[in-house]
Amino acid sequence: MKNSQDNFIEGIGNTPLIKLNAASKITGCNIYGKAEYLNPGGSVKDRAALALIKDAEEKKLISKGGIVVEGTAGNTGIGLCLIGNLKGYKTVIVMNENQTQEKKDALKNIGADLRLVPPKPYKDDGNYVKIAGRLAEELKKTNNHGVVWANQFDNTANSKGHYETTGPEIWDQTSGKIDGFICSSGTGGTISGVSRFLKEKNKNIKIYLSDPAGSALYNYIQNGKLKSEGGSITEGIGSSRITANFAEAKIDSAYSIDDQESLPVLYSLIENEGLSLGTSCGVNIAGAIRMGKELGPGKTIVTILCDKSDKYNSKLFNKEFLKEKGLPYPNWL
Ligand code: PMP
Image (cartoon, rainbow, N blue to C red; front, side, top):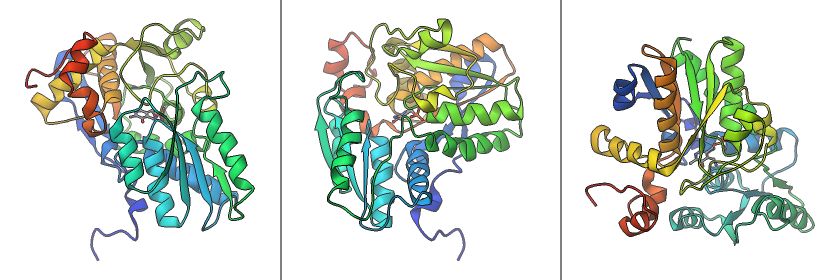
């Protein structure tokens, strides 16, 4: 059998690099996006989901009939649920109720047990991540096949997954001729794993964080203080704290990117390059453009195309919503 797989999990990773033409032209650099939206669950988080489940299996914490519990902005939940379905694990997902309906539907439609909670800061006991941790403890009492809290924020199996796959793929795909890598951080798994791998290969490769407005990480990288300003309609990225995964990242510098800057990048990619990408990609690519301008022409820069726009239709293509917020909207709406 040619080009066949035993199961869909084998299709996670090994995504292509796609040249971002406008970003490259504006900067005189070669800017590439790693097409993580091509993963079977539709996002970069399939890699984390697989790494977290493998970690639990290696530690013999779960067997068929067991439950994976996780607090997620959605994408990790989708990955965990799909992998869980194949392996015979149930998936319980705790998510903030302010995430898009599209992500809630996606999770419900694949059979996740979705628990929506009001958004609360991390320091509050009602924060979705903390609820997920407590729920896993609770469920352990009634399930003897193993109940695992995946804990993507502070379980460094997440960044290890990127260190072992995403980082080496980027190094190979660029034949080591890479000058810069930039992406945003949610759990920090991607930027931590990729930065550690690339810096080990060549410490001169610049690693930048592209942080959405409203996140405290930009100020943390630039002046050591966790302080946030403004806000953003992006989902799945930004943080008010240093997670265990982010703590291991090797980051040289950071940009703060607001929606006014990132949304036109997304709309231009749809209109001119046929790429319809999710909100975090706007932050990543706007950051890559700034990085290209800073490093100068001729450089090769890679960023992450985390997911597609389809999970954010009710925000990205909702003219009333965007107008109300004073944000740009596509001229074809
Ligand atoms: N983009 C999207 C759309 C995401 O869902 C996430 C993860 N929540 C990220 C980016 C950030 O990836 P990481 O958790 O590896 O930092």
